[in-house]
Amino acid sequence: MTTSTTKQKLAIHGGPKVRSALFPAHLTIGEEEKQAVNKVLDSGVLSNYLGTHHENFMGGTFVRECEQAWASYFGAAHALAVNSNTSGLIAALGAIGIGPGDEVIVTAYSMSASATAPLIYGATPVFADVEPDMFCLDPNSIEAVITENTRAIVIVDLFGQPFDANAIRAIANKHNLKIIEDCAQAPGATLNGKKAGLLGDIGVFSLNYHKHIHCGEGGILLTNDDDLAQRIALIRNHAESVVESMGVSNLENMIGYNFRMTEIEAAIAHCQLKKLDSLLEKRRDRVQYFESKMAGFEALTMPAVREGATHAYYTHPCLWNEDLKVNRDVFIKAVQAELACFELREKEGVKLNVGYVRPIYSLAAFQQRVSMGRSHDPLATAWQDFSTSLCPVVENLHYRQLVVHEFIVPSMQNSDIDDVVNAFEKVWEQRDQLLA
Image 1 (cartoon, one colour):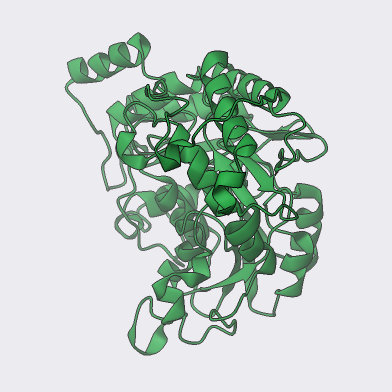
Image 2 (cartoon, rainbow, N blue to C red):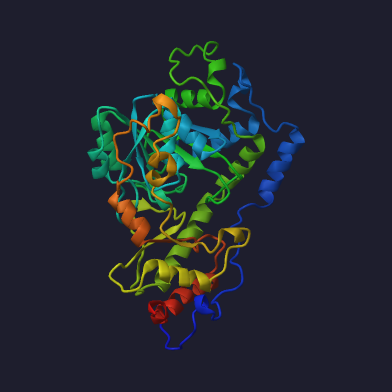
């Protein structure tokens, strides 16, 4: 990182911004997707599911082609398309037989659905803490909260980092637990040559608009278990209407939903998958460039990558040096003021933030212990105390250490990243203005 002695008034105090022009939009939709959508439109069939025992119970042509492509890319026995990652998590938990009285170990640091999905089946989410440098569930913290009621672990490959699969699989095997891998942020990430999504019993991906690849909304589940694949397919599409005619004898959680992906979404998702490797390579190139330019910047530590892993870098999570006199939140707010938003995401503000999301147990549902309500609410009888600092590492990351940005998306050029680095540099050199 270069240094300059030129004094400049910070933008947060009325000085000129380092960057006023919007950063280029992260756009992955091109002619291929347009042609695929037109092909669907020309077919006249926008969805071809039937909620009866029929060949179309598994969806139409484009859904099936999409699923086959995802299964092939990941080397999975089964890929099943759904309308969102949230639906996928619900279907996965239903498929493994989660029910009232069960406990599911979850992370406190993720999009809320990663922890609330067990509530759909009357099960209790139990929070474990995360690793301080890689942000996935800490194996020791998982072990500490296992009880006789624990049935599964929902683990998140947060920010694109694969979880510690060897250690957590050993725990799961020891206690006869299923692993649901929420890899919404990690498509194409690997651990010891194995792709994320196949590190647990069921992997769930997201295809909503700000992910690596997307079809607007959508999700894909992967599994190598034939029985789980069938149960996911049943939950996805009105299981209760077809179990008799399909000869299904295990009726547990066989009240189904409409979690079906449309033909248009499937056609787009199929096209998008073909671009994943190239987009990941560009993300990693941007990360490497940013980290090289920020070398020696004492306020931030660049993210660790697990041994044997390739990171997907949904975002770029850095750690703030708490030994400095400058407050993290004040400093980052000043850097934000120097920069612009991304095109098409102007209303979201500058994509540089302190922390990630509030610890999930701080949400009103957990604080007030109300989800289903009435007498059988699993939150009302949960044994954890949600009013305390339940997960100290999560709390420290969110409120003191973590700095997350998205200036590593494929649309960013080196010159764009230079502006980001210059903003950090400008504020750091003039940090005395923040101490007044």
